Image (tube, rainbow, N blue to C red):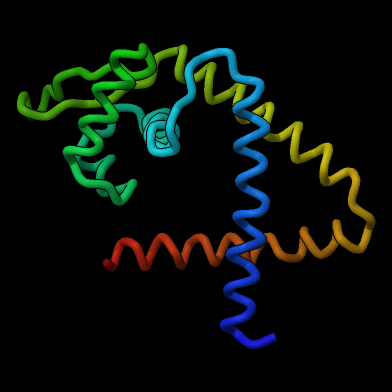
Length: 151
């Protein structure tokens, strides 16, 4: 397979995996749906509590005003705490609430269980192929992040 065909097939396969995962997980949610960017921001704040809005925007490759809008919504929904940065009173630091941590934990557990059930249906050859592909997929993700940083 040539590089162009491989790239197209890979992109289609990744979407073909990600979309049904998102749809299945949404079905079991009792709370209002969060958009993808909101989930990404929550994940970032959980892993880097105290991050500023401008740093979060850079990390997520979003405009600062877009992140501010997301922050306002997530603060209103009780998922984020915005506090004044003591080092720069004009800046805000973002902290996750326990509700945010619980929601992300629940989502991660449900996602893992869904994927685990489907992986268990694969034969040994497919399992080995997936395992062997993980380092390359991680490197691909890293390259995509680096390219986005350079843009």
